[in-house]
Image (cartoon, rainbow, N blue to C red):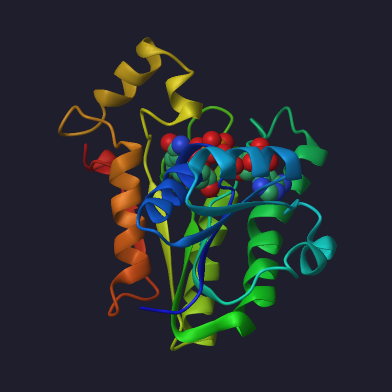
Length: 233
Ligand SMILES: NC(=O)c1ccc[n+]([C@@H]2O[C@H](COP(=O)([O-])OP(=O)(O)OC[C@H]3O[C@@H](n4cnc5c(N)ncnc54)[C@H](OP(=O)(O)O)[C@@H]3O)[C@@H](O)[C@H]2O)c1
């Protein structure tokens, strides 16, 4: 097992919080990050165990070196964060689009750049993309774009960082995640009808897949679809 903490960037809610909870429950040192230091600390206290909170803004990549300076050795890094811009190409919010592209592509890359000197050869990285790259939904224009970018970034990182492993996970609609659960039953039912099993991916399914990608010693450069077969029908 790699030495050091589990760092979850975008760990204050949703899928990142579930990943943080999993590793805290295993007795690991966990650092969870979101934009606001006090919120991150409060969430870390709620998660408990050896969990600490960190405030950083991926959309301000020039500040990340300072914000990450206090982190020691890193065993596993999960880059989970997103700030959805709900954009369409005909009604385009340029500022929100620029912020999203910066945070999820430049910000993710800068975090890896800063933390990789603190990783052993058997450490690992997982990046969150998403199936919206192949199956857009209303408002997903830039989400689809950055999630496609994650697939490119992971290929390059897997080669450049080797033997450190780097993989991407691309969930489909995660029905019990805060973002999709808030959309309500009629919307979820529409998506349930699009997957062969009629059952949407859960946050627990995603955590299981993240643990696999972070811990399986033979998997690198993968783009793993955890989407209940969304594109099959
Ligand atoms: N939910 C799904 O069904 C689904 C499907 C496919 C892909 N995904 C992918 O899975 C990942 C997690 O999705 P989610 O639905 O769990 O997200 P979420 O509930 O919206 O949580 C987003 C997280 O990102 C953090 N964050 C937002 N902007 C940030 C910034 N500029 N700098 C640092 N942290 C920031 C938030 O923390 P603060 O608010 O505290 O800053 C929060 O912890 C995303 O990458 C998403 O694209 C999700």
